[in-house]
Image (cartoon, rainbow, N blue to C red; front, side):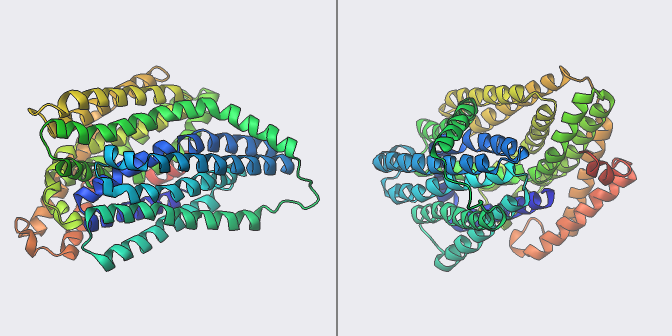
Length: 501
């Protein structure tokens, strides 16, 4: 799972970079707003129901009650398909309003139409994925997601490469269509795998009453999960819609506002979140380890694992932050062919450490059975972000800088609240020189080595992609060498990580 998660993150990042390069800032802004709109319409079918399906399938499967397992699957799949059709009709009815009010372009109505197949396919695939998790089959849905990422990458990037250059509206529409294409292949693989691996016994009669009772159980369990999950989705949606609107209130045109939003959310944030490739794998291992230790009251082991997870997070996040600060312009040119992105990368680079630690802290809280605290803290931070966006972004004195203020202000509050919640369960000391000082020194050496190896870094036209990547790899080796020299990497680090669960 860790390897597949790593592979998915790499393919996903490559897709976002390729998409940004072909589409440009304005199209990426339209696509990001479309994605947020799509997720809002999917709250009912993908927020609480899949988690409930996983729990109930796991319970019935442990009792060897395959009839109930299939009843849960069949009833929820039918419900989700029916609900997704109703949601699609609502979306269709308000398509023009969404394209004009949210996407700020009436010609984006075709993109809104392309959300409809995505709603239906995603609603179905979420049930299949949850079914596999309930059967303790983590490999099948992971393969399905890799197939989804790969097919979407190959087909959509291939289309964009063939028709490039593309108008922003057409490019955003193709990217929206890519969601349905990738999810379709995910769904086909999942259906094929279910029929192959989990065949329903033919001598079991179809009991409609049993299916109805199973569906009621699922819906009853999903209500609180859906309510809590919807808060985050709705707040993110408000955040997405609010930024372009407040930029226009500050004096920017509609096209400029969408382009700024695209450069931040579609180009800068994928780089800032690159550390999640490592922290996601870390959190997967960390949660079961801490859950077991908190049950056994092994507080010494809990402190060790928390300290190790923070250390690993900073070993990855600090050099990435240094790269973005020191090489923002080369990265903007080589990745996106857009020098205007460089300023956003440079200013938001420090958020790499902030978001990486926040991700790890959330995982620690889940492992310590403090998931409510993690959710509440996240909601508080998002509400604060919306308030700050409204106050600062719409003010002509701040404009774009208001986005940075809201980003750092809200994420800092979430990080502090998460840290307080962790310390309420277990007290632990941090060796700041070891976990911050040493990686920071190594990062400075890394950036210096890269600058020395690229003699003409100021003249970006003379730098080949291969030469730049080679320098990055050499700089990474220099970073690792300094870490070993300063004994910043604990002995048997990888063995410790593997033994976390």
